[in-house]
Length: 241
Length: 313
Image (tube, rainbow over all chains, first blue to last red; front, top):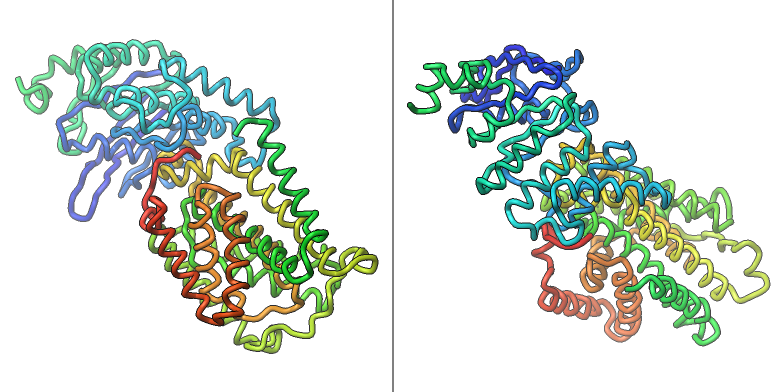
């Protein structure tokens, strides 16, 4: 599904991601963990296409996407959420999600939609909001933190991705909210591939079928949650025990 | 505004404007017609500045593209107002595509400077290519535009007022409809959050270019009216002062609105007529004074132009 080969990302002399090779199979729930500054977010942005790999190749579904820009990759089925909520603050929650729904249906740049099409888009957007227990009206910028995080996820899911990239979805959430989010990720359709960066290890071990550990720009361990938890190298680099 | 008012108010306004020839003399009617044409151009700039978040200091270049195209069409091709309008709008689209392709790759302050340069280049182009445009003296000896034969039955100023009203209403309707549609929502999205738009699969440059093309095409239609009304166009029509005037109309009218700038434009054109006959060039002091007032009185003054602000689309 997603195949990274020897991907490096350098900013001048600083190599943020160093020859990462990563394979994620269809339907897999892969967590990416690692200490701060390990390059997780950089790697994420590179997979999404917001940053360009300095070397190496990224293929998605057998297509080489290394040179494609972010919008093109989004249209191929890669959608990400942002570590810091990145919403259309001035637009209503419904309008936020409607932009995702219209993009998914390929009508995002139409000058005009017939009444039936409009109603259909709004119904679909409202359904995604309801899944996340969000109200359609009121500007997204006025939502409390937890609500903004949920709107992030609602927008990404409304885009109907085949590969969903979640960048610290539980950041700043209460324990109860995190648990709820973890349950929601577990319940996503089985054919959806999910790659999640997360600091909250409860969430990681609740949702992940595989875990990769990133430290100083490189993958230092790979395996099932149990294997990773037991690995001495990981404990030294990350778990701090 | 509730749904019924949203239909009733525009109809009442349109009927009242169409009835103006029965109450106004030829001179004030002509000023109103000019005011409406500037109103359409101000609305197109409000679409670009407020809705797309792209403040421009060179919008008069589109006025020029439309006005010169209409004038040249009248001189060399056709006296028909409709033909001139269509070609003027096409010229606006073309000009928007060429300049917009570069402009949308800049942001905020740099977009402002880029459009200022475009406006200056347009003035120079109109001045220097004197064999085609008449240079500094402007495009003169333009034959009067025919208005589908109606001008033979009624006074020209009256028929032209109706023609202008039709074009302004249509252009305004296009802006309102596009703002409400999916593309309009995408343009608002690109204003609010580029990174998210890209993550959703929208090409932000393309969305912005669409906004520039829409605004440019509508403004060119207004420019064609300016030329048709007086059968004259000169480089002073697209001077940076005109771009600033349009921007003042937008700020005065409220850049989040489309109707507000039209109202402000009609009012400012009347003020210009009244004061410039008495004050000459010093009417600019009046414009400047109004500008200062609106910057002080409107919380979203110039400083808000290149700052993203939360507001309902």
